[in-house]
Image 1 (cartoon, helix red, strand yellow):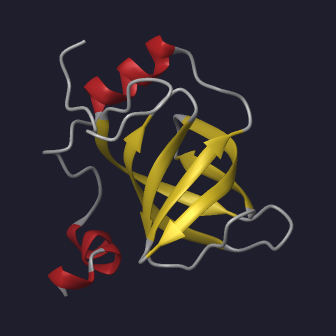
Image 2 (tube, helix red, strand yellow; image 1 turned 120 degrees about the vertical axis):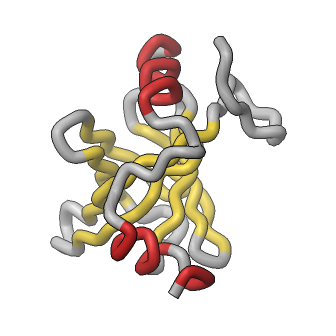
Length: 120
């Protein structure tokens, strides 16, 4: 698998990606934009402009492609780690890694600025 991979060791490969997502809290009704920056069979790492807390139940959605119910495991300075309720298959992770490499931005510059305070 020829892709960028995080240096942080985990249960499975964690390729770096760059894809826009919508996060929703099913019970609270909140929805907000986020960026999936890393993905594995077990979960993903997100950058978001909204606060989340460990234990929050969320749905990570890549519009038109996927919806993954997940639980927030950790959060620190606008970065969040989420664990999928149902793990992805390795071929699914590979497909997303190939489709959304980190050097490509897959959403408008305005949304990118909203997610990255340094670019404002």
